[in-house]
Image (tube, rainbow, N blue to C red):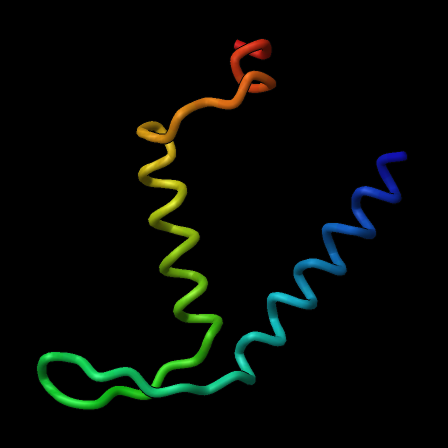
Length: 65
């Protein structure tokens, strides 16, 4: 079963990598800036990791601790 999980994880990484091809513009206070979806997703993922301790735990997580 571990191989199947690894395959799924690698497929997810490949899909996430494709986000680098999606370009969009956002307006910042100092002007316009061009970014891609991968950069935006990376920032969101980092924030989720940093702030995870403040999120309510689901019942499955509480049983593990």
